[in-house]
Length: 74
Image 1 (tube, helix red, strand yellow):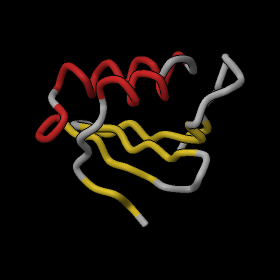
Image 2: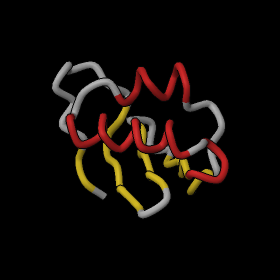
Image 3: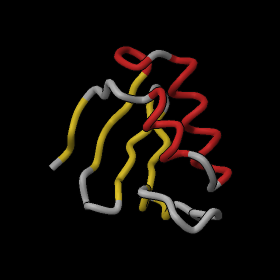
């Protein structure tokens, strides 16, 4: 996983991993979730990928639009 840059300084996201059809996001509490095209939809997942790379806005986007995830990784 790649460290999230957290340019705003207050993100709940710690790290992410971009996958071909999804993104894996690790939050500050240690929980890791997989968001994929199948469950969340291509449009939302691709937006999450862009925000992850930019280092800003990912946590807010997930709170607003990312509710359904494909899997929770322990």
